[in-house]
Length: 162
Image 1 (spheres, one colour):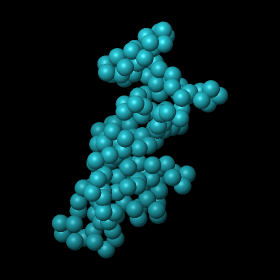
Image 2: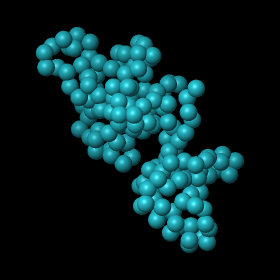
Image 3: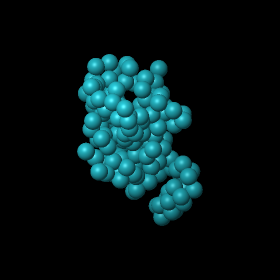
Image 4: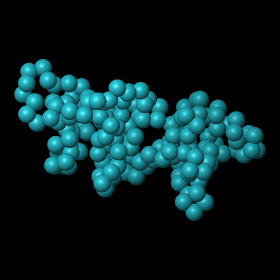
Protein backbone atom coordinates (compact mmCIF):
# COMPACT_ATOMS: atom_id res chain seq x y z
CA UNK A 1 0.00 0.00 0.00
CA UNK A 2 1.25 3.47 -0.88
CA UNK A 3 2.14 5.85 1.93
CA UNK A 4 -0.16 8.89 1.95
CA UNK A 5 1.65 12.10 2.79
CA UNK A 6 1.88 15.69 1.68
CA UNK A 7 4.11 18.72 1.59
CA UNK A 8 3.09 22.36 1.20
CA UNK A 9 4.56 25.42 -0.47
CA UNK A 10 3.80 28.42 1.72
CA UNK A 11 5.35 31.90 1.79
CA UNK A 12 8.08 30.85 -0.69
CA UNK A 13 9.15 27.85 1.40
CA UNK A 14 8.49 24.10 1.13
CA UNK A 15 7.24 22.53 4.38
CA UNK A 16 6.33 19.02 5.42
CA UNK A 17 2.66 18.68 6.35
CA UNK A 18 1.89 17.40 9.85
CA UNK A 19 -1.88 17.23 9.27
CA UNK A 20 -4.71 18.63 7.19
CA UNK A 21 -7.99 19.57 8.87
CA UNK A 22 -10.67 19.84 6.21
CA UNK A 23 -13.37 20.71 8.74
CA UNK A 24 -11.60 23.88 9.85
CA UNK A 25 -9.89 24.42 6.49
CA UNK A 26 -6.35 24.51 7.76
CA UNK A 27 -3.08 22.69 7.25
CA UNK A 28 -0.41 22.28 9.92
CA UNK A 29 3.06 22.91 8.51
CA UNK A 30 6.12 21.29 10.02
CA UNK A 31 9.54 22.97 9.94
CA UNK A 32 12.19 20.83 8.23
CA UNK A 33 15.19 23.14 8.58
CA UNK A 34 16.58 25.93 10.75
CA UNK A 35 15.28 28.73 8.51
CA UNK A 36 11.75 27.37 8.76
CA UNK A 37 12.07 26.85 12.52
CA UNK A 38 12.97 30.54 12.95
CA UNK A 39 10.14 31.60 10.63
CA UNK A 40 7.54 29.54 12.51
CA UNK A 41 8.91 30.54 15.91
CA UNK A 42 8.67 34.25 15.03
CA UNK A 43 5.04 33.93 13.91
CA UNK A 44 4.03 31.79 16.88
CA UNK A 45 5.68 34.18 19.38
CA UNK A 46 3.70 37.09 17.94
CA UNK A 47 0.53 35.05 18.40
CA UNK A 48 1.71 33.89 21.86
CA UNK A 49 1.52 30.25 20.80
CA UNK A 50 4.06 27.52 21.54
CA UNK A 51 3.55 24.88 18.85
CA UNK A 52 6.88 23.03 18.64
CA UNK A 53 7.95 24.07 15.13
CA UNK A 54 4.42 23.75 13.75
CA UNK A 55 2.32 26.42 12.12
CA UNK A 56 -1.38 26.25 11.27
CA UNK A 57 -2.39 28.14 8.11
CA UNK A 58 -5.46 28.29 5.89
CA UNK A 59 -5.43 25.60 3.21
CA UNK A 60 -6.24 28.23 0.58
CA UNK A 61 -2.97 30.04 1.35
CA UNK A 62 -0.74 27.00 0.83
CA UNK A 63 -0.11 24.84 -2.23
CA UNK A 64 -0.56 21.23 -1.13
CA UNK A 65 1.32 18.52 -3.03
CA UNK A 66 0.77 14.78 -2.66
CA UNK A 67 3.52 12.15 -2.48
CA UNK A 68 3.35 9.83 -5.51
CA UNK A 69 4.52 6.77 -3.60
CA UNK A 70 7.51 6.66 -5.97
CA UNK A 71 11.21 7.40 -5.50
CA UNK A 72 13.78 8.53 -8.03
CA UNK A 73 17.10 6.83 -8.81
CA UNK A 74 18.67 8.47 -5.73
CA UNK A 75 15.90 7.37 -3.36
CA UNK A 76 14.36 10.86 -3.23
CA UNK A 77 10.59 10.87 -2.77
CA UNK A 78 8.71 12.21 -5.80
CA UNK A 79 5.86 14.65 -5.15
CA UNK A 80 3.29 16.32 -7.32
CA UNK A 81 4.92 19.46 -8.72
CA UNK A 82 8.44 18.03 -8.74
CA UNK A 83 10.61 18.51 -11.80
CA UNK A 84 12.35 15.34 -12.93
CA UNK A 85 15.32 14.88 -15.24
CA UNK A 86 15.50 11.78 -17.43
CA UNK A 87 17.18 10.35 -20.50
CA UNK A 88 14.84 10.57 -23.47
CA UNK A 89 14.92 9.21 -27.01
CA UNK A 90 12.55 11.44 -28.91
CA UNK A 91 9.29 10.41 -30.50
CA UNK A 92 8.89 7.07 -32.24
CA UNK A 93 10.79 6.83 -35.49
CA UNK A 94 13.68 8.93 -34.24
CA UNK A 95 15.03 6.83 -31.38
CA UNK A 96 17.50 4.96 -33.54
CA UNK A 97 19.09 8.03 -35.09
CA UNK A 98 22.61 8.30 -33.75
CA UNK A 99 23.06 11.15 -31.32
CA UNK A 100 19.34 11.79 -30.88
CA UNK A 101 19.23 10.63 -27.25
CA UNK A 102 18.96 13.65 -24.98
CA UNK A 103 18.25 14.73 -21.42
CA UNK A 104 14.73 16.00 -20.87
CA UNK A 105 12.92 17.61 -17.92
CA UNK A 106 9.22 17.54 -17.03
CA UNK A 107 6.93 18.23 -14.09
CA UNK A 108 5.02 15.52 -12.22
CA UNK A 109 1.24 15.99 -12.13
CA UNK A 110 -1.84 14.04 -11.12
CA UNK A 111 -4.16 14.12 -14.11
CA UNK A 112 -6.73 11.78 -15.64
CA UNK A 113 -6.77 9.77 -12.40
CA UNK A 114 -3.05 8.93 -12.58
CA UNK A 115 0.46 10.32 -12.21
CA UNK A 116 1.76 11.86 -15.43
CA UNK A 117 4.54 14.07 -16.76
CA UNK A 118 3.72 17.47 -18.22
CA UNK A 119 5.45 20.72 -19.21
CA UNK A 120 8.31 18.94 -20.96
CA UNK A 121 11.43 20.98 -21.60
CA UNK A 122 11.42 19.31 -25.04
CA UNK A 123 8.00 18.12 -26.24
CA UNK A 124 9.60 15.64 -28.66
CA UNK A 125 9.56 13.02 -25.90
CA UNK A 126 9.50 9.27 -26.39
CA UNK A 127 8.20 8.80 -22.84
CA UNK A 128 4.80 10.16 -23.95
CA UNK A 129 4.06 6.99 -25.91
CA UNK A 130 4.89 4.81 -22.89
CA UNK A 131 2.85 7.08 -20.60
CA UNK A 132 -0.19 6.87 -22.88
CA UNK A 133 0.03 3.21 -23.92
CA UNK A 134 1.24 1.22 -20.90
CA UNK A 135 1.02 3.17 -17.67
CA UNK A 136 2.64 0.37 -15.62
CA UNK A 137 5.78 0.58 -17.78
CA UNK A 138 5.68 4.36 -17.47
CA UNK A 139 5.52 4.21 -13.66
CA UNK A 140 8.49 1.80 -13.69
CA UNK A 141 10.47 4.48 -15.58
CA UNK A 142 10.32 6.78 -12.52
CA UNK A 143 13.10 4.67 -10.94
CA UNK A 144 15.49 6.04 -13.57
CA UNK A 145 14.37 9.68 -13.14
CA UNK A 146 16.09 12.24 -10.92
CA UNK A 147 14.26 14.94 -8.95
CA UNK A 148 16.07 18.22 -9.65
CA UNK A 149 13.61 20.71 -8.16
CA UNK A 150 9.97 21.68 -8.23
CA UNK A 151 7.76 24.08 -10.17
CA UNK A 152 7.35 26.45 -7.20
CA UNK A 153 10.96 26.94 -6.11
CA UNK A 154 12.68 26.26 -9.46
CA UNK A 155 10.35 27.27 -12.32
CA UNK A 156 13.34 28.37 -14.39
CA UNK A 157 14.27 24.71 -14.93
CA UNK A 158 11.41 24.45 -17.43
CA UNK A 159 11.94 27.83 -19.09
CA UNK A 160 12.68 27.71 -22.79
CA UNK A 161 10.29 24.81 -23.32
CA UNK A 162 9.62 23.88 -26.93
